Amino acid sequence: MNRRKFIAFPAPRRGGAGSFLTVFCLIVLGLSPVHGDQSATDRVAIVVSKHIRPYVEAVEGLKSGFSAYANIVPRVFNLEKLNNQARAGLFEDERVNGFSLFIAVGPEAAASVWKGVGNKGPAKLYVMVLHPEKLLGEREKLFGVPLNIPVGTQVEMIHRGLPSVRQIGLLYDPEHNRAFFRRAADAAAALNLTVVPLRVASKKGIPGALQGRWTDMDALWLIPDRTVISERIVRYLIKDAFLQQRPVIGYNRFFYETGAALAFVFDYRALGRQCAQQALRILSGQSCRETPPVFHVWVNKGVCDKLGLRYPEEYMPPLSPGP
Image (cartoon, rainbow, N blue to C red; front, side, top):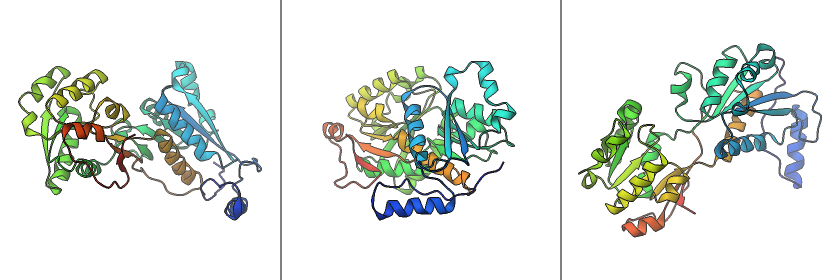
C-alpha cells in the first residue's frame, strides 16, 4: 500500500508562535493540517460493536485525536446496524484494501475485524476490549488499548486509597480469573497485604462464599467476572458489605455511584484519544504495541466516613476524591 510517512504531533493550539510552528512543521513533513490539501489520504475504518455510551464516547475521542490532520479520513461502521450480508461486505478484499487502518471499538468489533481483515490486510488496532489476548489469541501481534489495568497497579492503588485495608477479599470464579487471583496475591504480598480468595462457580454460590468470611477481610474487591457480576448482584453486595461495615472496591463509575468506597474509573473519550495516538504512530510507519489504559481511581470519602475508614490526606494521580 502506498502510504506517505509523517510524524505525529499533538493537535495545535489556537494562536501564538507555538501554533504557527506546529503548522509549519506539519507542512514541511507532508502532513496537512485541517485546512490544507487533502490529496494524499489515509482512510481509517472505525468498526463499533454497538451503539452504547462508552463506545460512542470512545469514537468521539478517536475523532478528536484525528481532527488536526486533514489527510486522515475516518469512517465509522456500527456492526449493530449492519445485517449479515453488509458485515461480510465490509471485509471483502477490495473494500478492505481501500483502508490504511482498521480500529475496532469493543470486543464484538475486534473479533470481526481480526477475522475479516486477517494477517495480510491493513494494520489493526483495538480499544475498549477486556482481555484481548483471550478474545483474539495470545499468539497474535496485538496492538491497541485494552480495558485491563495491570493487577499489581490495582493492588497498589487500593493500598494507597484505603490505607487501613490489609486483607482484601476477592470474589471470583476460578474458571475465569484464577490467574488474576495469583497475580493479585503476589502483588499484595510485596506490600504486606493479603488477598483472601472467595471462590464461586455460580451466582447462586455467592451468599455461601461470603457466609462466615466477613471477619477474614477488611474490604470486598469485585472485578470483571462473568459469573459474579451483574448490576443486581453489585447492589446486593454493596448493601450487604455496608451492613457488615466493610467497604467494596469496584471497577467503574456505576460501582462508585452505588456506594463502593473505591473504584477504578475510565474516561472513554481519553481512551479513544489514546488509541488515536497509536493510530498516528502506525500511519507514520513507526512501531506500536499494546498500551495500558489511562484511568482514574476515585475514593468515596462519604462512604469512608460512614464506615470509619482512613483515606489519603494528599492525593497523587491517578488517585483522587470522587465527584
